[in-house]
Amino acid sequence: MHIQNDSTASTRAAGRRRMKGGMTLGLLLSLCAAAPLSWAEDPGVTSNNIRIGATLPLEGDFKVYGLSMKRGMDAALADQTVQKRRVEFVAINDFYNPTEAVKAATQLIEKGIFAMVNSFGSPTTKAVLPLLAENKVPAIGFYTGAAFTGPGDVLNFRASYAKEVESVADAAMAAGIKPTEVCAYAQNDAYGMAGVQGFRAALAKQPGTESIVAKVDQILNMPGDNPERNGIGPVGVYPRDTVSARPGYLSLKKWEADTGNRCRLVVTTAVYDPAATFMGYARLKDERWIFSTPSPAGGTRLVALLKEYGIRDQVIGTQIVPALDSSLPVVAEARKALGEDLNYESLESYIVGKLFLTILRTIDGPLTRENFLKAARHQPYDIGGIQVDFTTDNQGSDFVMITYLRDGQFAVITPQELAALFK
Image (cartoon, rainbow, N blue to C red; front, side):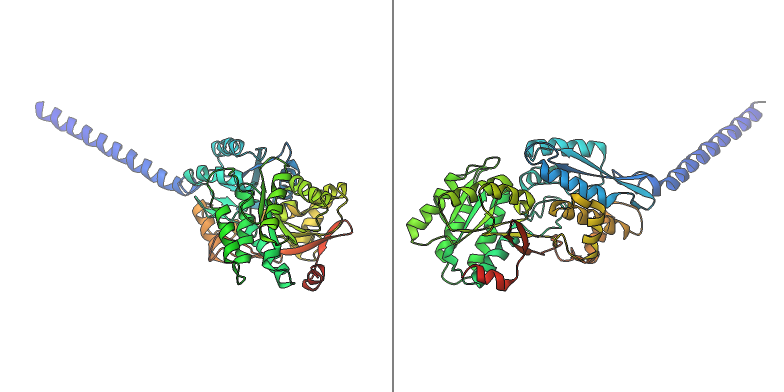
């Protein structure tokens, strides 16, 4: 009896071990089978959706930008799917305020987003990038020309503000303006100083400009968020979120008085209202300066504001996308999709949306951030006639178009016409 009980107990124990082993093996097999679905997907990717986000000024003084950008993205993503998943774009208002942008980005990350696409602004981007890097969220196609390279994974679509300003200054000097006759007016933050970098780059190419470049370097290298940059060199600044034109104007007049040079071209890096206020104030003072303005202030709103000051010409504008009446396929497609809502901001956002979709659709495998970034950097892309290339750096496009305010609207200007303007 005693032997039989031991044998029976041993048999039962072995059975339990086999059952437990079978259950463990089954659990492991089930986890392995589930791995491609659960482990492969990054935040923001579900079986039905790919969620992306942006922080935009949807309310307040800068909503003209944010609302246009949202319309462009919504039009580009409408009814589009990738690997049978709908792309969902979630935009949260940030008032173009760095603190609010960080709060909005935190909300988006908590919701679960695959990437941040087409957010607005240089100071807001500067504030948000560390948070995105910490959470491994890529930043793609932000509306900033400050040419951020990090922290984190940043893919810039638009040409930099430096490139826009440099292009105008180069063209003006090629048309006959002397380097000593080019001055700058800028917002006193990362956005404005990015434009001043382009001003510096254009000057540095010219012989005999070392002393002027040294002054510009002194201005650029000042620490802090809003240092006193006026009264030093051929640059005038205004504080962000103001339209205070007089101090920057006086800075340029001091430069003229101190050096005996006169500003014939003033390259500005401002937003709509401060740009128009400065140009109007200078005109009120009977200055015959020609102004330039980069893409964030080169649209129909600036035209309307300048009309109030009686300014209908003498302003050069740069854009980083083709003209709104261009025959390029992506522009024609955007015109049809956006109708009366087509402007330079909505067109740029439409292109960024199409770029995001195009890269995503080249992924052969799981929709992960790593695979997306690999696809983005693997090859150049043609987005309906617009060339975008991340294969050598994080700057997708260097396209800059020069326009001129003529008869109350900005139109493309040829180098010959530009030369005639400065004679």
